[in-house]
Amino acid sequence: MGISHVEAVVSGPSGRQAKVRFLVDSGATYSVLPAATWQDLGLEAQGPMDFSLADGTLITRQVSECLFEYDGVRRHSPVVLGEGSDEAILGVVTLENLGLVFNPFDRTLRPMKMMLA
Image (cartoon, rainbow, N blue to C red; front, top):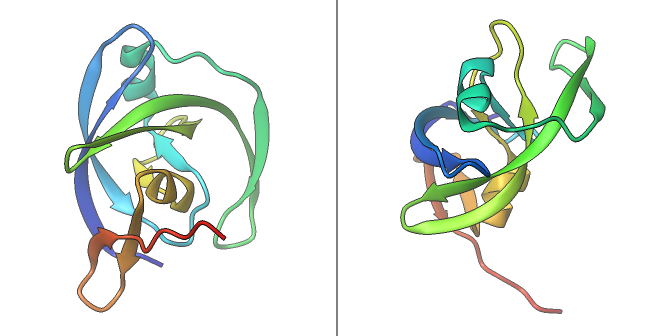
């Protein structure tokens, strides 16, 4: 699990952007956007998915996609549309799409060694 925060810019189909402070969570598959953020960006639900939380609780959340920008790199990624008090989380799929990996020793994001095999 990650215990570091980073700021990234997210944007939706409307062109609206938001700077978001994300918890980098190497145990999370998808990234999560808080409700106010994804609503401001104009994201629309593309369908529900079930997720298991760290304590084993199962929840259902709507999923969409948006554009993430971090350190000059911009890529699309699926995103969980947060509800209520859901916090901003940067998950592994988004990190991989950005070509990044979390270094647990110094809690930083580093370029991923890319393979074509």
